[in-house]
Image 1: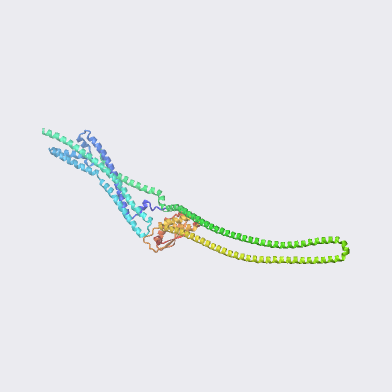
Image 2: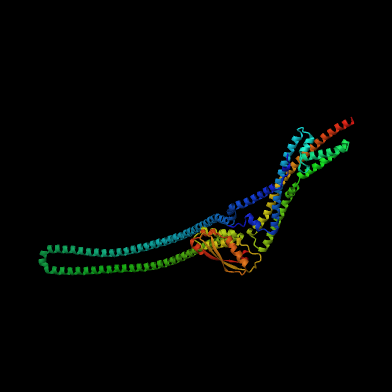
Length: 229
Length: 390
């Protein structure tokens, strides 16, 4: 009969506040999906490079050679970044001090800094995803409440208590809630998945940093004994 | 090992996210119109569906009620007829009895009269016979005497020679005497006959008098009886009529009460919900399709309600506004055009009225109307007043 109940028509005929809420939710949904896609790609690539680096690290190659092969510090990430930071600090401290404890302390500090940078990089925008996931239902609910308020106000003005007067208002108000949920549900799911993946990768980096630290410690112990002997 | 590709840009994810949302919006826009007709037409069409459903039901009920009413009426009529027939039969019987009695009485009377007549006749005949007998005897005796005379005359012929004179005188005398005696006898006979006649006359007169008295008494009795019977009959008739009247009045009262109750129920149902009344009207129209007026009325109500449902009164409209709209409809109930006949003076109000009609537009119930009403509603006016809707 007429398309007064179609979703685009309802959205276009909604009040300004509800339209703003809907716009906000749409932007939030699009942004959260951008984050989801980008993070998914980043995680997948980080996992792949981590596996490749670990394979190369444990293949018995010389550490100096490995250090030379890797690109500069700004372009590396993951375990490779941790390795570069630690090995560069080791090479810098080695000629300056004879205390192995001081060298190991400096290497560990440097690697922790690199690790925390990696953590920051991996968890980038995940907080935004969490915000969208938790806040968008409330924003949608606000739009709904506002719309229903408007519907009752118009009801009191028209004095015509028929369903057809109330229905469009409530329908357009409920669209706001629907959009809030539409934005929130993927955000929640992907936030949980991406943060768990990031946590797993960071755990792997930490493990690698410990192993690298023990290797350097072993080298320093041997050199200290040869120096002493 | 070039690590430049390990940096993930935002271009591709943005493209993907926007594409996903556009896809969702396009799906919601494209799939909805196909689903729309059944969703949007629900308001009016459902009403019709419900209406037809209930129609049959109520029509059935009305039919039943009518059947019951006719049955009851038939029963009442039958009862009345029975009573009538019984009274009639009774009366007939009474009449018959009376007639029989009368006939009997008449027969009796007639028989009595006949018997009396016969008696009288018999008496007369008796008298005549007796007179005849007497005459015959007299003749016989005369003949015998004549024979004896002849004998004697023949025997005494010789003697007669001698005594002819004397004998002739004697014969003469004797004959005279004979004559006298016969005369006397005849006279006596006549006298007796007269006597008998008088007697008979007297008897007849008596009889007559008695009969008259009897007849009078009979007539009197009959009149009285007649009177009594007529009175009784009249009374019975009056009683019967009164009873019939009473019964009829009671039946009428009951029917009236029943009708009133039904009307009250209908009114209550109408008060309960407009749509119900609408449906009821619609049902009624379908149930008695020949009552075109009612159907037309219900159609008008239906259109009015459908338009009222679709009418969103502008919030700023004053309450005293009033607009009249002319609707042109196809026989299928589709709207050809709606024009303002008399404007309310408020442009927004007029526009809202036209929008309401267009929104309510296909009045499919038009097809269920009888043709006469259809032609009547091809073009008609609707008046809009906000007060009507409240």
